[in-house]
Image: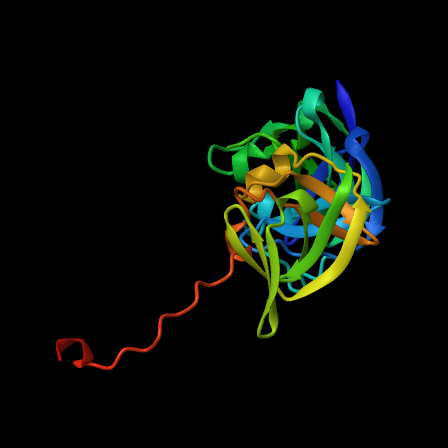
Length: 143
Length: 110
């Protein structure tokens, strides 16, 4: 089985988001930080008239921050388990490409490298570089 | 959800309190204190009153990364906001308790 993914740059990592979960890719939304939040939560934004929590994808994937982490792109995507999915924004450095990843190309993430709460489902090689495949369903679950 | 909401700014974020949860409103220097069941909240600005808010539940993602209680999320104009629970408001919103009058060393021994 293969799945189509959106590749985005997050810090020094390239991450793959399941395309079916992606609703929109936007220029960075205006963020309103929430005092007392974990560093992964950049803040709240307004998206299509609704409130949207925006997360730092590089921090979620435990990627080293890039040289210029200004998050010019927000990926709006469905997160959480199917019965309780919710829209979130993922602040990233760039949207790169859409690729098809055969299931056989995916190698399970090494223990301890799964990012926050096992968010990195595995790794694949795309165009000669390592891509971290993100499990958005795991995002809404308490670690 | 209707019934009226007070919309506040503090800490770079926007908050709302349902009218029925507001027990008092007073200016304290540059801040505005809004009293709710849990105590006094300090706002830097009251943005206004919203007659209605289209509330969204605070989902699992928010609860995972923001350890505070909230009745929900909404947008006021273009500002995303948190509707607070007057019984358990975010700690960062609580007003600092008034500092006691400075004591003079030895004064209590006389």
